[in-house]
Length: 165
Ligand code: FES
Image (cartoon, rainbow, N blue to C red; front, side, top):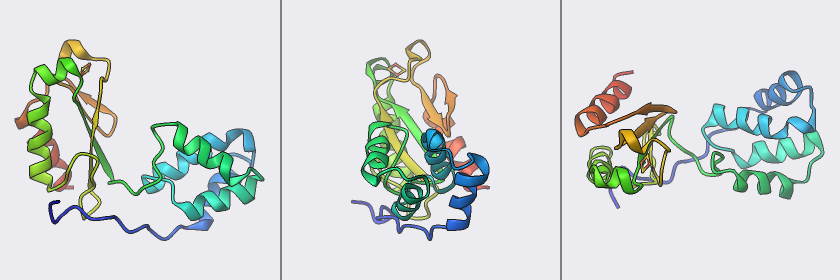
């Protein structure tokens, strides 16, 4: 495993922030539990365990129910992720257009394997099976922005832009 790939340490959870999300943004309404979880994830880029415990108590929903939701939706993560998520489609159409080589290129450039997060927590590299845009394959998505007909050159540019931030 490349040296740069490490288990990310969990950040300190700011309970004032969690409280603000629960009470100010959603009025403590348990019906909004998924939106609260989305807001927590937006802030931390994953769902920290202490935040879920706090949420469970604050809206009186069993922790098991919260974990059920967290594991059901692929958009939620229980492990720390990078600030920027790079999805490379490895579905059939994209694969035929060379996305496998792009995954290898990014993995080498960032020093992580697919599914991994860089040590500086800037990037997480993920592969997906089809992004529904096969006509413009290969497709790469950086932070929810689609990049059709992606190339290694474009990937280098995207990564360099983030690194220059
Ligand atoms: S296979 Fe990549 S978008 Fe469909």
